[in-house]
Length: 106
Length: 106
DNA sequence: AGTATATAAAACCTTTTGGTTTCATGTCAA
DNA sequence: TTGACATGAAACCAAAAGGTTTTATATACT
Image (tube, chains in turn green, brown, yellow, cyan):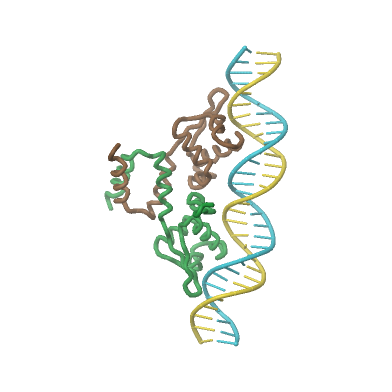
């Protein structure tokens, strides 16, 4: 059996809007579960499950620190998103154009 | 109610591996449902449902042509994927670098 | 007209998803 | 050591997802 037997992949992990929001939160800085929960209208248990899915996809990892569990982001697997859409928007020039557009006025 | 009341968004649409494969198929050329189905180990009905989800996300559209319904790809909504991961891998230079790397030797 | 083809629509089924509540456990602080 | 706090784990639940089969309808062919 594969060593990287993931129950959830990146595509599935980001399918849920709550999980996408969690990722954005963790992009700022690492956070304990309860603090993450405070940003959402649902229970801590629900958020913990979402974090499990994200961890399955290796998008986050948690370390226990005292009585709380602190989660941090690992954006690397998101690369797969780029590889995916570049199969469709492979036009390299359009990417350059986008970069330039979004850098002017910055 | 919103004019763009989508039941499914892009993130949800690409969460399923079958649907991702369907998109790849349609990237080559437009195809009727039965032909798409021939690439998968499931019923035509199942594929038709997947196509419905993709159409909800405005990633494909189908036009009836004679007795068959021909589907074509619309990659535009995939842009949202890029906007998403760039929140995390926002490093514009890495994109430029990638473009350059993939243009040399072409 | 009659048959074969391509799809549509509906009913049904099982598993997964996304949430809840409840109870147990470990840790910090007084 | 006694609470209060943070999490973990389990049982439970409704709705959505991803399939199937069956029945109907439209189009094409001969």
